[in-house]
Image 1 (cartoon, rainbow, N blue to C red):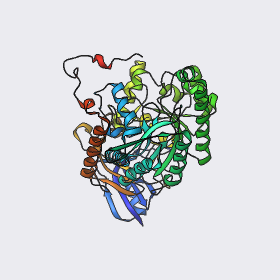
Image 2: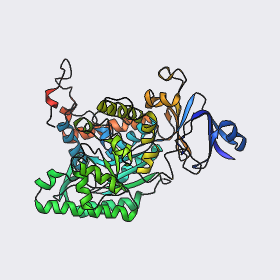
Image 3: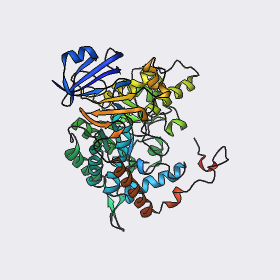
Image 4: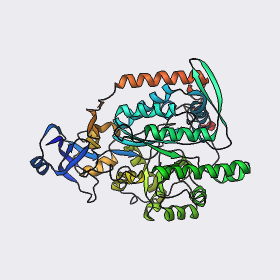
Length: 485
């Protein structure tokens, strides 16, 4: 006797055989899958009190976002597209401007967006910008973990120290009163170990902690004070060692132009290492990826992919594992992995002037089974197979932009979007039904996000960053956004 049967849909399980079953079913008991196959066979072997009719829908494994940033959900569009102004908002928010309420509200908003778009698991760095992580106290990370978990999805929350020199100034708020204080590297590391103890494996295993350090590039090696650079290398090695000791993912953001080769020299690359962006790689960078089995999180919709190119197809041809990431919702993106799959295909086909690159099935693998492997979770999620966790999404195919009803595997990757997701299960629990979240009040999440954003804007005096830019209309280029490559 199963708990849930999902029947009658176009089943695309991304299993080892890469089957497509046009009248397929999945049986679920507890948090796990107990049968996958043709509807007649599964229903003959399993009965259930709850039967979900998937006729007219596709049944897929939950999508996985390999790289995003916590906090960005309340800062998107600030600065009107100017990166310098947006980074200013990030730096202020993630050090001196945010409260536990901010991190809880943003986590719920981002988690709700993910679930609504069929993203059942994702990486979230606890901050962003240039080495700005909210790791002065574990209360902020814990607030994020609690908020995200309440929506029902899975989170891999990445935390770690900021780049030297230390100490760095952070602030706490008591109402309207701000209290600044210095934060050392040691304190940030203590925050990391506290959050590993408090949150890793919590919420039925849906919450996991990863560790991160700032990426060290040639400009840091050449421009930092020698003692600061030596400290940065040592700290990177210490954080990596801590990740390996606990069996955690070790991640770094913003690699490119020689930095992966530098990381290899530091001894911090391996299958536990997940490197984001990885644009304009040198031959040494490319070789380091191949030799160490480091994994790459490719973000084709990110600004970094405008300023440089991640050679994702070439890396995959060389045997490097590459997953797909959204880079979060700010300044100008979304958590919709369908959007990023489509962007990925067009991005590289344009680069080669050749539409044969990256067939749709490959990009679907990049945000399902390949992403699960990149996170070390391939035995739990990423495909619909017996024994794996029941992270399942149903995509409504009876939509004008998804008809006629032939070749559904192509229609899903070429034409679907996150708003076509109808039902989502995580760990065998329905967390989205008929496009509505089941575990949280969506209006309450939106209202809390708006209120916390307003508080942040007032605390940091960011009201001017919300004004419509003067070149929004009539201009073919905004000179305020021009930047050197």
